[in-house]
Image (tube, rainbow, N blue to C red; front, top):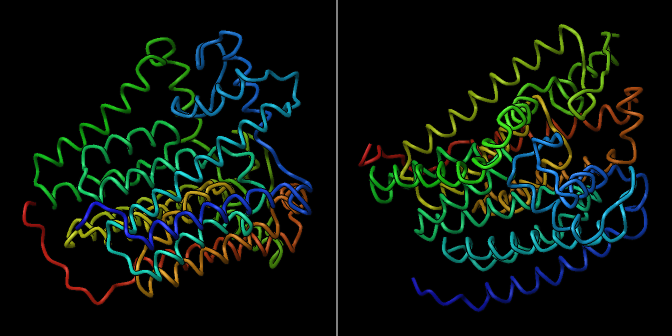
Length: 412
């Protein structure tokens, strides 16, 4: 295949970037400005601490992996805040960084679509879907840093499908250091490398991922092993968050049968407390792990083509989100540039379902979040359940058998 970009891919990428500029601007006007739930004040506190010479994890608690620090430090160095308020300068620079991450994700999508031989219609529809998706999800994109690890995930996929397996592994390792969720793609990347170039290349790919993660974490582990450990365990031991599928089912039972539910705030989120919530959190985790193992196994036993890698990657991310015990609105950002990469009718159905999930999320978040979190307001409760079930249907659509013959790996 020629290394020169196809003219229609270049044109689609430029149009998508222009549309993305427009959608980003629209997020700052009208109803998008109302009742925003912001994380940027938290980010500014991190940025201010770094600007004053404090060391993350040692001198102040940080709930995110160290690869997230540039998104807090750069705006913090530009303008320091005061108290709980986020300054205009910090917010503007942070949003600018997020826009660039979104633009990188779009360009990464274009690269994936070109290398994987996507049709003209697929190229245009996928890129325009991702460029317009911010309007469907809403203002949460402006105050969450999730576009940063998402851009790295797409860049990793672009390198992998282009045959740059070690580069893809390295970028995937960087994505894991920014936010832990890309770790669900590691088995797919290793299996893909094994099928494409054999066991030795797979081992090198895995070693590259681990090396990047180690290099980024090592300085902070050396300075404060307890601080880094607390950051990781705090995320991994979170209770049943109220937006997760398990919590939505419990709240639905509350409305229909009067099942008692109790909300408590911990780990930076609102969660359900009690025995039933604890059991559902455990069941959700087990189901999530089983679904991921199934996706990885199916992929490892397939021909492991680039198209199958993209489909399995989308399915893994959806499984992690839909079946987990924590489901925040910003998690859907991870899916926006990945699900549209799935080709064929499966990809069209998946993108349509993702679009529905985005809109259902915005209808209640942030506008009805307070009513849902504190009073389990019925309308918001049913909207959350509908969104969560839509994600489950999306997972089923991505995992549904295709009319392609699977073969056993030649090198396994």
